[in-house]
Amino acid sequence: MMNDPSRFIEDRESLLGSFEALFRARGMSGIYGRVFGALMLSANTMTQDQISEYTGYSVPAVSGALDELIRLGLVQKLRRHNNRKYFYTSRVDLDAMFRRTLQAIHEEYVTPVLNRLEKTEQMLQHSHGEETRQHLETVKRYQGELNDLKKYLEKLLEVR
Image (cartoon, rainbow, N blue to C red; front, side, top):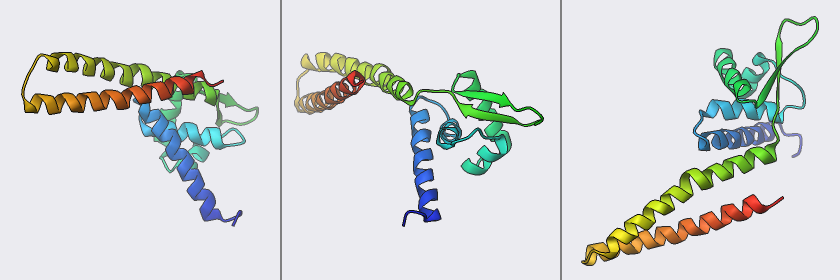
């Protein structure tokens, strides 16, 4: 049913969880992703109280997350005439944000691990024994899987 409130809450939680995972992949706390996600999903600016209600985090936790998101340039803080409260809105191009995340995964995780596996493979080439052979097979298998991931990330980054 399209107007089912429980379905909306489930969808919202799924989307907020996706933003949380995206921010965690960048080494940040999940709260930043959920707060940012709330702002991205909102058609209007939001107050700290509204963000708190939307995400389930306390107002002080939301306030701290907003301060960091503002510092990073992802959120804008606004004040309306005749209103003491601040209002917040997202300031980011999602496409650019996802591309930066994919680029970071490529550069900060996949490439260094591949380099390390290559060095391990070279070291194992000069050793002998059944255990070494099994270890070498495992290293080569991981290299193959990571090379596939690297190619996939590179193709995603080429898409415009």
